[in-house]
Amino acid sequence: MDNVNFPTEVYLILSNAALHWILDQEALFSHFWQLLKPNGELLIECGGGKNLETTLPVIFKIIQFDQFREQFVLISDLISRN
Image (cartoon, rainbow, N blue to C red; front, top):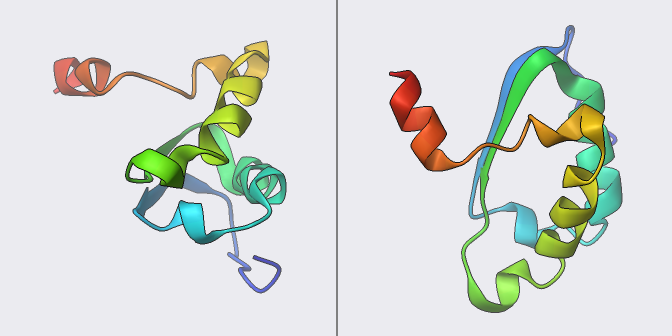
């Protein structure tokens, strides 16, 4: 993560079946927060079962903060936007 340097902030971070391999979940999501532009979106899929044992508690903790809550949307909300 320390080697990911974008010249600017981004509107979207997308990950499919990769984040469960990152050991430091807190640092990962902190880094994402720094990379996202205001109103940017984080779209992630981590698989299921044991893959989510470390990711879900971090996400549930982050969702409790007002500044992050609206960044987490249901897939049905995304579909209804189109």
